[in-house]
Image (tube, rainbow, N blue to C red; front, top):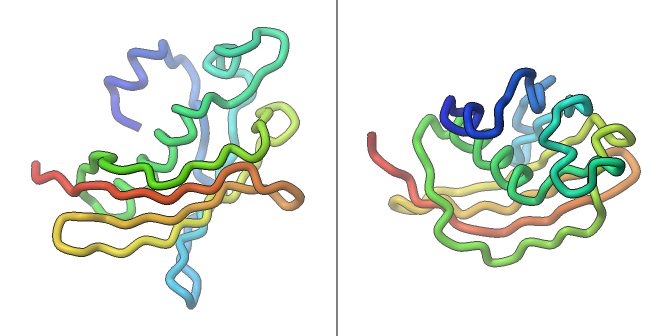
Length: 133
């Protein structure tokens, strides 16, 4: 996570932690994360009903991609984002993010799903532009 984002949200604790990251035989990157349900960012929508904000979900996805491709990225096109179910960090702290991507020239084409063992929360399709330092 970049320092500016962490500072902007007043981060005193981790928002999430990567538990495991590996590519399978089909080239799908599977990343298991654990949300920190005590972080105040989850109170942003409803103080008494903590949920993960959609913009944070997209930020986590981008963080993982940046780490994987070792390059800065800019989201240039959101072809399809389906928020199928709310992610409640107290109820669903552990998530799997599955990402399939390919690079053509400076464009990273991405399909991703965020789920746990029982629920599919989000489906994403979009393009990122790779940025040179």
